[in-house]
Image 1 (tube, rainbow over the protein chains, first blue to last red):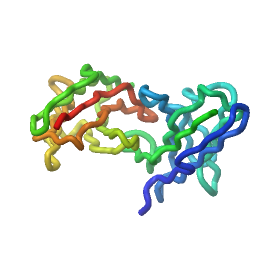
Image 2 (cartoon, chains in turn cyan, purple):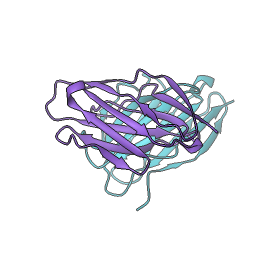
Image 3 (cartoon, one colour):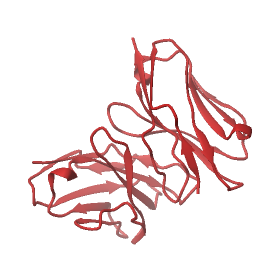
Length: 114
Length: 111
């Protein structure tokens, strides 16, 4: 049973480009969570999705960021018109249900904006 | 909603020492869950344990042990005979709709 798969592991984008980060949850998991970790900082919650629904996006910046988790395929975190401040590690986690259960994390995508 | 406090921001020990990481929680729920995660220098978060509020038995897994005490609202984590590979940031995230992580406790194990 494969773990949470994130790709790419490393992504370099120029300022103004778009970044698309992918997350395939563990088999049987329908809940996905995205987190961002800036250098030397803690992990910040961004968004929580269940298949085809955004459940909680309270940590998501209001502009340029969006997330989806379609019925088929991986969850996508999309960052439009990237800026240097978007450089961070983005982690995805999945769980089989909401609340009271552990979430398993992927290895992260390290985004560098040049 | 649950709130947790990891008062220790950084701990440094020498290899083979025992070390305890503190986690104090607040909740009004009668049923709740507590977690520990580890983030080694490689970056990936590793799930260590989940404990539900009905189970106050201590848990031991190799050199790791967890002491859950409702009376003091604590869920502490002890590493026995620490090793350099234990160096990491350890999180005790509060339960919510999604787990949220603070700054954790950074453990440095010196050789």
